[in-house]
Length: 249
Image (spheres, rainbow, N blue to C red):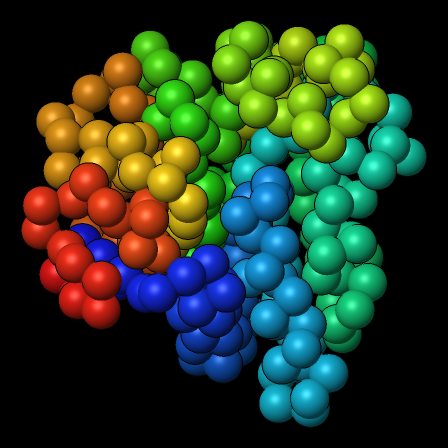
């Protein structure tokens, strides 16, 4: 595992975008696993800026979403396909049919999750971007999720719903279920890139990077992967014992 600690959130976004760009340039048909949430806004904006500057093409790239809310209207701005469209795909040379995600309005959500799991597994993601929740979750895999879990329908914890309520008019609008890639599915990616910034992420980052591998901290499963990069600002790294600002471990 490589841990990169930079000064602030904008620098973390640029560092993460560098890694994504390296994969896009190295692969003829790159497959990128994308997360949503405020952590990724700066990363995707940096990629858009690089494309608009004429130096980075996404032609031939496919995007695979980590998860999707269950029951949310597909036109809702917080449907994750729309989040990726607004933040990235509408602004680069990426066709809409190159963005894949589970259907949160499918009549049989469990069957939809199984189909999406097979799709992601067969795609073999080249680089999977991850954020980390305040309770240590990755994607929508809450504490207690088996570390070998495949994709499925999950109940969102009240803490996760509260954390995500800022994207909705009220917490009552936040869905209670989602389809998510399982931890075992995520670990099949060739490379994992976890990005975090802010003091509120320091505890889950410490537990994920330096704590024991445990279902109580789903993000700790990244320790089981052979190729992981973690990009942090100084605040998110503040509780780590093995990394300091400006250091790489």
